[in-house]
Length: 170
Image (cartoon, rainbow, N blue to C red; front, side):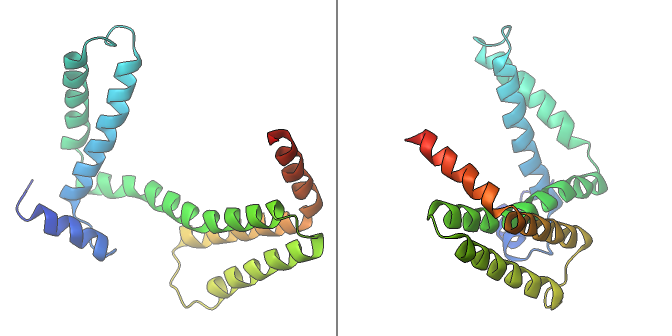
């Protein structure tokens, strides 16, 4: 692992999405595994009071689980994170719109109009092919479209759900 210009390499990875520095990904994966294992080991009764042993066990597991991964295995593990990122980027605006139209107590026609406008923007982005979607991005976009159509069809029930939840919070 080459640690020269680590900050530059880290910056390049975020500025150029097509650039993947395997060493940086390996470090991030190590930190992720370290955090998960440290939390899990800390929850066990045996090691709860022994922080030094927790750290040693966590370091050993984290190092062994990242040191021997090949480049192809690391790249394969990124696919799941790619899809998670796409889901979050696509679903969060939909959730914000849904919360806005239902919490603001608009009438059903206005709610449906807002959701249809959101759907038109989503369809424009998807069908104009202005952006080169991968297969996973296409599937996620279609899934968001399906959720949006369901939200339009079941608007009355969805609004009733939000209204009941709002009443319980008071």
